[in-house]
Amino acid sequence: MATYLLAVCDVTNPNENFKKYIGLSGAMIEKHGGKYVVRGPAKEILKGDLLTGKIVIITEWPSMDTLHGFLNDPEYVNEVVPLRDGTGEYHFAAYE
Image (cartoon, rainbow, N blue to C red):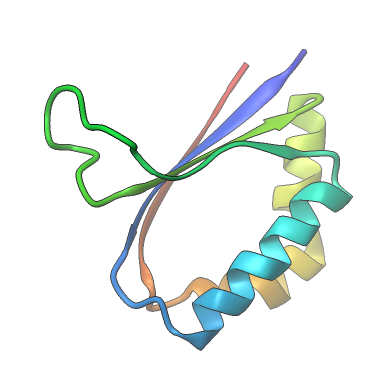
């Protein structure tokens, strides 16, 4: 069953490590069979202010197992995720 990862990101320090994170995480998503559906700030906020100034990323995965394969990949966990440290606040959820 298709699975979607939703990330709501409040990037406060887009430093050089964050720029590396963007490129490396994108390559890892592709390597594990994921694809971007949405990536960036809202074109228009229609109601409320929760998403104002936030970046929203939605990726699609073939299954929950493939998503977990990505999230638990030792290269992603040990080399890519640490690049995000100190760059903002991130919230993730998976949906089927």
